[in-house]
Image (cartoon, rainbow, N blue to C red):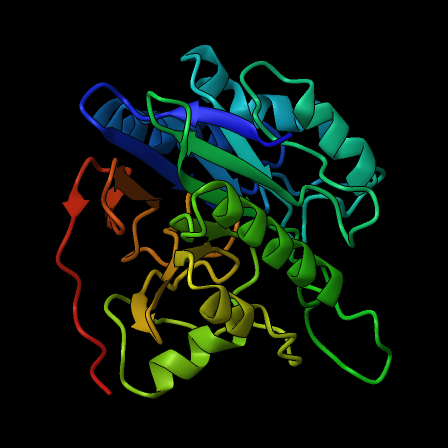
Length: 307
């Protein structure tokens, strides 16, 4: 059964997307990352926090579960529900995805689910946002985008697999069937960007910063096409590329990067760390989104793609 959450009394539901936290040792840079997260949460008072991968970056000597607990401490302390999807660095040392996802599920206020064991990866699941009458008003899909290609002849990053895509489409149809045949508006969260992020930017669409290449898979497995066909996903949210934060509409779906949160990894001095904020409104098919930086600055208007 899918986890259920509720809109606020004013009809809003606010999500903070933290991405690429890269918690490493709990020392100075990680504490600076925590300060970024605290500033963003103070400003936004979210209903849900979503970590879109690379929450931790374990080393041979690190206790990955302890690092994870440290990374989410400030969210847990506030009693905010939080969800997680895997990045490519989270299980680099001495822990499997199955082990880490079970530890995450066991943490206070975690709404993460392991998802069907038959699917590729761990943490493929759905959260429903409900109306007061119990009906589903919006769906949040979480997908494990993997690590690196498992095909020896193909370099680069992994891709969301056919069984995961089929599962998403099945969930979408089931929610529509419960909604008198009408698609339930949805958002999707994963770590590694889809090839369409690159395609959209190269065609001149998009707003925001593209300061590095799009590190997407070299194989297009068809998730975007499935979302277009289902007609329910309004926006997708990824991380992975730390100095990209752009978004753009592509065939009716808004493809959005988060804003890299963690300081214990690569970045740029002129590109402050922060988060992406997403707000849903009950009864409205759409969402608003903006960036909130660790400085406290709110960025709503972003520069148009100069191409």
